[in-house]
Image (cartoon, rainbow, N blue to C red; front, side):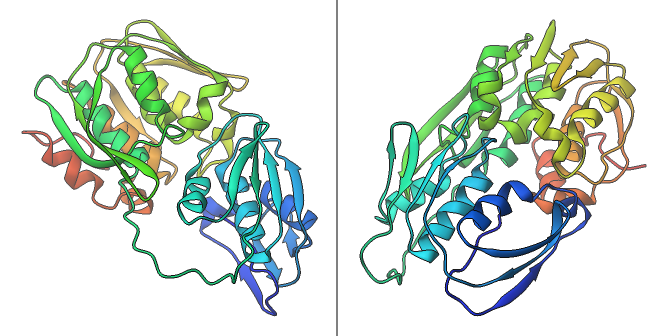
Amino acid sequence: MLGVLAGQTFAATLTGDASLRRRPMRRVTEPLKQMGADIKERGDGLPLTIRGGKLRGLTYSSPVASAQVKSAILFAGLTGKVPVTIREPYRSRDHTERLFAYLGLGIHVRDGAIVFEPPNRPSAHPPIKLAVPGDISSAAFLVAAAVLADGGELLVENVGVNPTRTGVLVVLERMGAHVERVNLRDEGGEPVADLLVRPAALKGTEVTAAEIPTLVDEVPVLAVLASRAAGETVFREVGELRVKESNRLELIAANLRGLGVRAEALGNDLHVEGTEKPPRGRVDTASDHRLAMAFAVLGTVDGANVKLSERKSVAISYPEFFRDLDNIYARRTTHDAR
């Protein structure tokens, strides 16, 4: 996420690895520039050079439902001590709004827009102790493995179940899998639960465009589950996947086809036809952590022979993924890169 520290006389150049450098940044830099931020770009990606300066308030209608865009504007408003109002085409993840509310920072929803009015007090906030729940985007891979298993049950503890992030659980229920939320509680303004998962027979479904912001990072693992479901599953308006760490949309479809699954990206939609045939073949992860983990989960199916092009990329978000995946099975899974 790109934010701006207002009123500071500093200059910084931001860059990242190859996957981050291919991500579009103008969706973030444009509204920040409208606030008065001094940002020098080279095209639509990293690196960027930012110079501190005075910011002004902003009313902004975002063309995309993006928590990163929204949060960058909110943090700029906070550090610049200026009001901001943000509208989105669909509701995106609201972790930043919840944090602001938890800290009493003057944020609310008015006529469907997110409105932040900086508090009339010094910017320094007393120290806080905040528990950060487990990421449902990471937990989703273990949940999916448990759904595909032959038996048993799996308990994944301390998972954030923020309603703007639980689209994956809603879709799983629709596909026939039941993920029970136990020990539900609130920590730091975020709902948290333990997830109890059992194997399930899956059926295809349609994932609507309005649901995508609540599960965009889980589309790869939902797609591999769809490949084991009865019938067709369609993911609507997932063109955003083309500008993630890889072109996830095309790679999900191509890799599923390489494993013997009927799958196709048609425009911005992804179509996956389920099959009972064991998946066998080589997967090009393009060093994308979510592709590596999703197809490793598919490799746990009986009779599968799924060979990943690499596995180091999982360190981006879940360094212990393969250890945890192995630990929930009595046998080794077929995820070794060869």
